Image (cartoon, rainbow, N blue to C red; front, side, top):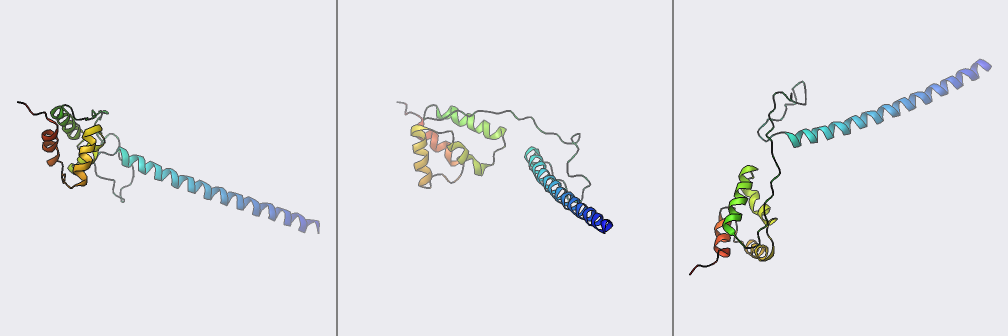
Length: 151
């Protein structure tokens, strides 16, 4: 009888150990999946636009850093536009967009973040009334509105 009790206790301990190991293994697997997702997000963020994504059939998900050239980008500040010096501001914002290779479809939205005061109120009115449909229409309208008349 004592042998049967010992076997039952050993079996119970063994079952508990298996449950703990299985639980731990599931936790490790979940952590690994989360870390893999985070690494994929980071790789996507640092990947240059013209560098092709790794194919699912490739043996490694991370490209060799010796074959990847990541252009050095510095943080550039765009001055706020308050209605003064429209030609200078247009030049600077166009340089900013060229440097960052900003798609034309995003330029009006980004420019609006750098406007304030009367210029921002004018921009809101013009946008709300459908006066700006694309970036090329904006600089001319801005220059016309904010360049003082010379007599």
